[in-house]
Image: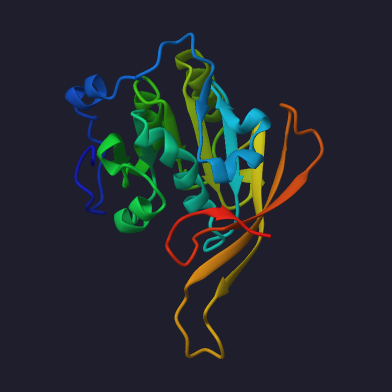
Length: 230
């Protein structure tokens, strides 16, 4: 669902997220639960194969690399098992593609055009969702990054940050996923149709992944899903 209009018209300030949405999007697990499970095809990307609540993960990759799709895929299993999720700043949500990746869009709050209020929108949603995917529009000030990471830790939510370059997020997170290579299948000599994308994800971070590890994925497969690639 959308927190407010998806129109990209200029806004003097970000409209508030309706209170009924924040009340409805309550975490379905108690604060004592420490992890959130993800799609089995992606478990090799994370230490212990699941998200630790209260942590921040950054997703780096140029436009078209699949970084946003990876963020959606990391939320998909949680949404399908009853968790509420949020997406802030993804201007073209691509609902059909998201559903093919396994996302239950009935349990996702989209804020596609937060304008200058993107940090406030993210902070508000962290009060009620289990996983939040944030696509900031520019380099993030250190104070804003620190505030959001602290809010995620306090609320025991998972914060995913999708940026084009590492310098856009000024604080080292618990985990970093970098999309270093991407190639499409099916283009032939320029007269074919795109059918599947194979991407390389380099994983490094402070929690059990001190040495970078490379993992190949189909993102998406020919069927629009995600799975490991040889």
